[in-house]
Amino acid sequence: MDQIIAILGGVLIAGIIFKLLAALAVGALARFLLPGKDQVGWGITILVGFIGGWVYDIVGGLVGFVKPGTNGGLFGAIVGAIVLLLVYRLWKSSQSKSASAPKH
Image 1 (cartoon, rainbow, N blue to C red):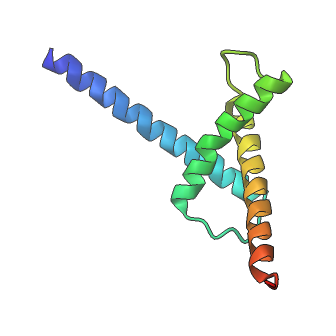
Image 2 (spheres, helix red, strand yellow):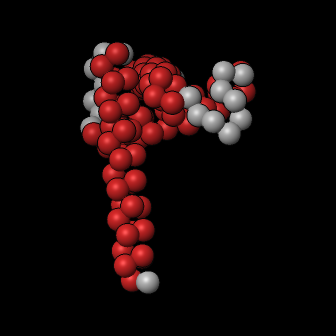
């Protein structure tokens, strides 16, 4: 029984590492395809890649690009990550404009 638990634990850890590396690759590719002066580190890049897949799956499902119970794959994750980067840049630019606006 201990061997089975050890094997399952190893598979779980390998799956988590694979997902983190895939999210890093997706986030880095999205940042490469949408160059800019984003001051974000590896953690945010992984988060953008990981959440990008969800964004595409949700929006793609609502629009009809993605069938229920499936996902958009690598292409969808990259598109979702690019959308997240665009939203982040819009939010960041609105924050800098409101911070520099004179207060009455």
